[in-house]
Image 1 (cartoon, rainbow, N blue to C red):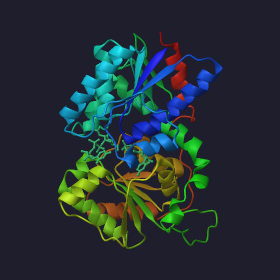
Image 2 (image 1 turned 135 degrees about the vertical axis):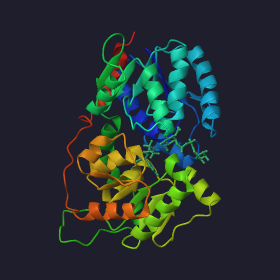
Image 3 (image 1 turned 90 degrees about the horizontal axis):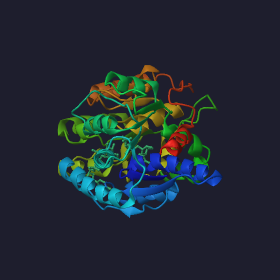
Length: 378
Ligand code: UD1
Ligand code: UDP
């Protein structure tokens, strides 16, 4: 069986690396899946792209479509045209797409129009906010898909509400979250491989509790269009980071989108309080997350990683797809208002003893389960 995997953006390299590894492991027993990797080129800076291929042993793409940046219509349209050409040539038995980016939608649409079954990893997520480009991408991709690999029971329920259920030609399964597989795999080696804490001069927090590994910094990430493309929201968030930075430095690996907008509006936080750094590799990111006092983010993936590491998360959004992290008390939605963000951090920090998060994201074997389903496709 030939599978074409479509990737293009940072979180997709991380997710695809886990499933690709599971395919290779399965093929060692008996070669059943030939994976053709197609990179749309949506992300292209070294630290948004190649670093993940190198660090996570993701095979080199068989096709690099070089699409690059652009408006939604233009970017998705060019991807659609180029992916279609690859699919016509390769004639895969299924197309595997991840998450909710423009690369996801283009891959799903190109395949569905050619009557090639679409397999969607991270199916069923909803923010119920259609102003988010990602929500449009997810909705359409799920409705085009034949195989819907959901990370949570909530995701399965979300699909049910839209009439998408297991049976009648569709496979809808809660397999767990491939990013949880990934964190379990890498968190064992992360300390050995990453020197980021030392490089940035970050040290352990002085506390009575010797078991507590927390270091004296906050970690922040910011890239969601609703925050970056609205200067009022962006300014308000940066103001909050400046305030939080009075207590402990805020480390902010800057997404290129945010960097660009900050330059346009000439926004720069106090560099003693908010340390702007280039995007970091996955292992460096996991290390920064693991030892942070708390994480402020608008990223989907980072919210979950905070939860899995048991680090308080303050989400700079008005809603989230990852409702389990909020229900458990580990994640708080604060939006973009300065006061509310600061208050959210203080509430989250009131109790910094190690806590356990109940696992709603499977048992770390999501990628193996996905491969077991893919093998059965005829
Ligand atoms: C995309 C996804 C988003 C995902 C994020 C992961 C869509 C609609 N959005 O958002 O869901 O959470 O990736 O990080 O698909 N840029 C560079 N270098 C790069 C990549 C981007 O400079 O390597 C800049 C360009 O100015 C570009 C802007 O960032 O216009 C936005 O990039 P784009 O891929 O369109 O969206 P993201 O914000 O990265
Ligand atoms: N990440 C990374 N380096 C960074 C920022 C994020 O490796 O500088 C990782 C992060 O650990 C997570 C994934 O990228 O695994 C999340 O991607 P992103 O925030 O870009 O997108 P989202 O999850 O919001 O779609």
